[in-house]
Length: 187
Image (cartoon, rainbow, N blue to C red; front, side, top):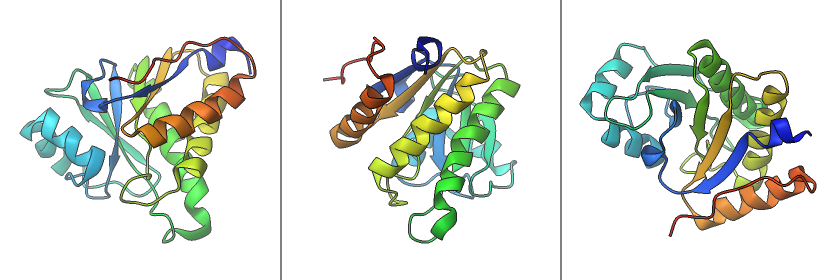
């Protein structure tokens, strides 16, 4: 890995609805009509207009992504992606989770998004073990960034200390001594 690729990634603990980037990614359910966890937080923070726009999209299959405006969020856009349900989507879960990140990044590029923030997709109510999910998230993102220069910053915004620690530990092994700034957890 080069610093050009690794240096565009940041790990942060906090509330994704407060991050000022071009787009935040919503760990959505297939209906795109809001739900629990980060999905519910994003819908609540963005306001009723987000729900109205999501109704017009007709849902989203697992592994795919859709884009909407950000409305009341600091982010201009919300990219909605549906992660796999661990233990239900079976042996396809790793590929489906990787597709969430890849398809979200591709949609970001298509829409002129230079800065993007991801939650830990599928690690909440969908039950994906964070240790496995974090490797897929970071590895898929790094692979994408190797071939794309338009995305200047990818921020993984983790809501819990445990998720933050897992992401930081894995990211430290990836960096392999490359000095990269990572923001300290919000306190």
